[in-house]
Image (cartoon, rainbow, N blue to C red; front, side, top):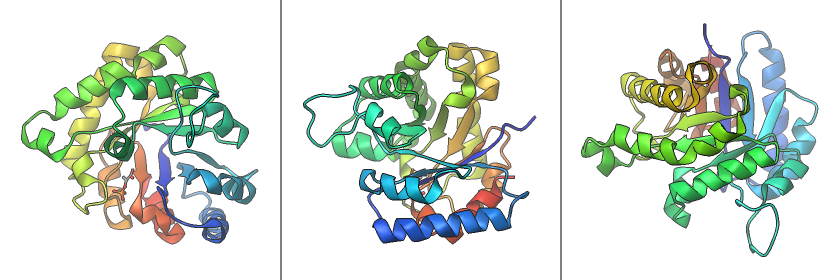
Length: 257
Ligand code: PEP
């Protein structure tokens, strides 16, 4: 049985308030017009200053939103950071943890990512945990080793929380595919997703592994979404660049079926 898919838009550090308002209108219009075909759960990850605009634009709809990052603590002297409590207060249902651009730009370690996962769960947010190997790691044949290590360190908070599998998700985001146009082939994506599901089964048990949604991210576009989604362990997408255009994102959502 197919898991109910997720299509998630990561706006990164893009768009302004008026863009966000227009985007929400276009997205909701499109979802309404295509009701019945677009069965995917839809998520938006806007930059922090746009959360109120997104909340105003999407409140009461079937689209949920989340923070692109969160601090491992709930409050305190951490200038420039945002806590899980603040995200929840802004209406967020989700939080990204471990995006490769955070790991690259801010030196985030797997151990820190694990603390962020714990902070999300503590504040009632569903963590979307991102993992993926760099090009050098891939070329060195270390993909599974890297994915296994990332999960081994970041999964314990999920195991400890006993959270139901629908209240978190994984994203396989090979770093070499993010923003490069070098999308993983459907076979490469499926192989990695299959491996991640095996690791989930070992660490969280078979029923949780079977029910957990594993998204693919890395240069997903309307033209390649359907073939990637054909992989039995590919349960939707985390989309960066192509999600900035609501019409393109709607086409990707349609590819999740
Ligand atoms: C991302 O930022 O999570 C991502 C997958 O980006 P892009 O779709 O642009 O490769």
